[in-house]
Length: 112
Image 1 (tube, one colour):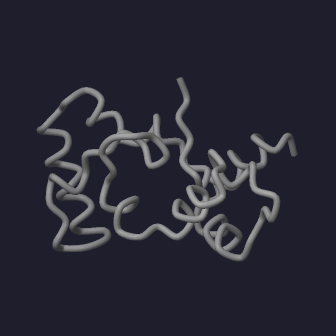
Image 2 (spheres, rainbow, N blue to C red):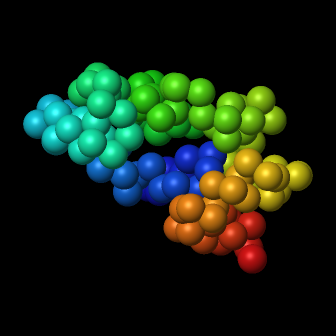
């Protein structure tokens, strides 16, 4: 089953999501190490566990650290930005420039 984040990233294809669902502590530790190098040297393994940003359960550091896109989708009660009546807003448009796969996913969801 494909799980899609508010922004159009495909959670079910994310290494953090897959490792969480498998309960793979070693993979979580490896991802935390990668994220420390890429994003923030303070990231710990506990920050990686994720059940998907729009699902109940654990949220990775990206989702729980104030993701404006996720917060907006939750407030508007939409599953993802493709369902929003003001799509594409400035926030998601800027994100899609740097993450073209998310843009592709949202376009597909909108039937474009």
